[in-house]
Length: 441
Image 1 (cartoon, rainbow, N blue to C red):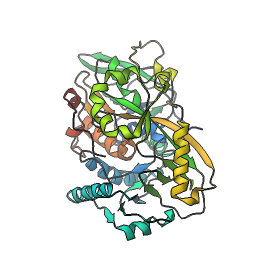
Image 2 (tube, rainbow, N blue to C red):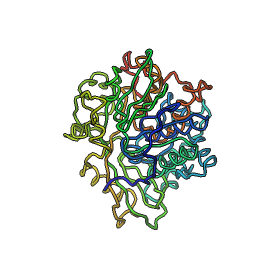
Image 3 (cartoon, helix red, strand yellow):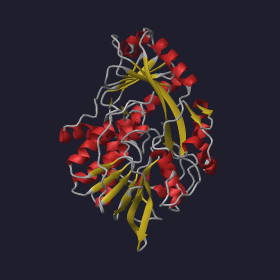
Image 4 (cartoon, one colour):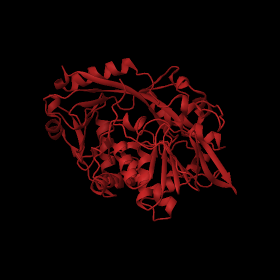
């Protein structure tokens, strides 16, 4: 079964013009459109499938500062406040709660790494608590076993992947901007050396600004415009189980398995970092730039199959603006689940938390996590197409930092003081070598 998702009714009538067009209605796209609309801009948000239907509804739902790379931490901190403010400003419920995130371990090297991050986090005002064996055992009593140590980040939390992006889309509509589903953006038009319109399958929207938040499709879209954007996808499989009576942690990470409480009282189960690399033409094209990342994470990755080719998001095809594109052939990336991973994840979860035994598996799904060579997103105006802002390559971190990313993009477009320093995210950094600069977490 696919990942749960709340559907949103949206408009079929495209505007002739807009102050900005956002391409892609994942969590980054919807928050970008929302923050632009709150500043009085008329925004059109176009989505080839459904709002939040790809990775934005297929992730764990963690909204964390803990273990963030130094380049992403400021955005993560701002995002936590924005998650809270969004609910207060709109009355829409994303399911966000500062429930705290718990990490447990028996690996002294891993615990020492968390302690080093704690020391760094203190320098930027982030609170996290190291746990000795006694405190870890108390926090992790649901496991029924002892632990050498752990860490608890009390101000971090979770939101509901099934409802978050749809909730933001409803807020956009209330602000008199528009959201268009089953409406793929095929390309752009240019006048005077800069972007002048976005061409969709249902018509053309005149605009001077477009934001490409296309997730795993972004690199293919960029290639049509002469923009080289290195991007690779990992196919990750997770599952959910139904509610039970046990007193389980809201969000728990261990090296063997991680669990997250869902809005319905059930839990999402996953193995952190585990995934399959489906060979595609795009993967081969950018293989050299991704070598440092794969060398660091090879233990968690396995060779995949033909899912990437079937999905079509990483081909090297070119397409015409007056013909259906690969995005219309594959409206929603819904790759095959790795059944072995799902089985192993479930077994490990029941071993870790005996209360899971007897709970029904309610769903299992896979999704493509799009990554950059250094594991940090690309956010900024492209040099090749002035007026086009790239917002992609969130490397599995996009859900939690989606509000901050959307706010930053709105700042860049409107000329406001950036909510965080935009320099670490600039896309032009990929013109230089990324060797040795892979994100730590």
